[in-house]
Image 1 (cartoon, rainbow over the protein chains, first blue to last red):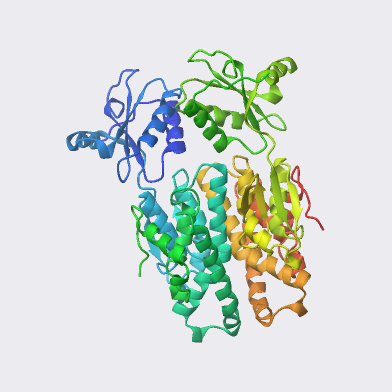
Image 2 (tube, one colour):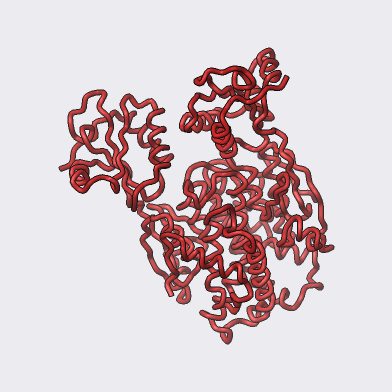
Length: 308
Length: 308
């Protein structure tokens, strides 16, 4: 059975605006109880059920609760975590609830599973418990350079692209940022947040064009198929890739993570191509602190490996 | 006279953390009233005075007010804009206030003035009205590869580096982010913020290595002094630079700015090397929408030109 929400448009707008500001991606919200199709008193609470992939944090529930308490809404909002209630109560909720924010965020990752840049986004989503649909392309067959792809997905002819509803977001690190804003993977502190970006820009400028490009050339294109101009670049890319890995190794010699005391997007961005750097001829034995950090990354709750 | 702050260490930590997250650079904060050396009741408000170079925006005051309301603090926080109060009230405030966050931000830009990456940071600071000290290096003379520079400023041997007190932040776009967090140059909307980063990563990956590198090679190194491997890369860099500028031109054909309806860090990052692209042999006449956007950038209040 489906009822009608019993709140005014202005009340609905206030609830929506608080949820839009504070609800992380992948957490849904719905109304149940008397304001979901019943006959509430004017002072009846709004019963709001939140549904994530696992139990919600006390911190999140506290933040939402305070925001509702301090709003102009004329009634209290009671928050219930879908994952924490008894199965019988859950049945009652599910039978009457009216969705406000869908859990399914309609995210599609346009990817080639062999690409570390695509893997970054999948790993970020996995660590945050956000479900992602995928659509695969074979870059070796030019499938990201078709007129359809250029017109609809990315005029730059590259993957990954994160599709959010009908919007398209190119650039792997920007897509990770979209998913992780407001989570611990993006610190709120001004310097720490900029420092995370510092390593993400380092990754795209000093690491990826060397470490990832040599992997692509040597493992996927094949040295014999490289152009003369590409052949001529190998020594410089080898040296620059070694320098990037050495810098990382020195940074990690006395710290567990690139920024602060836990994993952030800086670690995820750098993990993507570093953990397969040997496929480009960079021996991990030369970088012991990096090798130890790779193991810490693999031990993170929710970690997923790159498709082989 | 100087008093003692009457708050618990945990309360002080919560206030500090909200200010660190939301207060723009160059805005100071201080406590006055009964909690600045008086004898407050347990429920007395905390009187907080904010001091910028001009009147603070309603948006900023609203954001701070909400954050304090939604915090765990056991009392209200009353916000006062130093620039908006009467001279007589200002005198009372100034006589008793206890500083929490200093207005003076000890920022030093380590730069080579010919570098567009350094200019980005100077332009961001100028548009935001943030004063920056500078320290110049000549990259042609290897001044960023000295043992002192590598040990103290940036182990990656590159400029720009933004020095904040005794902390060092490499990567031009990360430094811009540090300065602009909380301002209109970094939109708060989740998608728009990620979209700004999308163009900043595009700039570092698809634009700078082609448009800026050819400018550096042709104008500063000189074609005759390039290595054979560099010579061999010119056609590919020419094609990739043209593709980046064409993509920008198509994006700007029907919009004034890269993201949303005003200038953001995306525009600043892309302006830096685009406005001197002809020095690398990319004719601006081929990109009329880009040329028109360059003029809009130059008309921004506070705009400063790159040193010639």
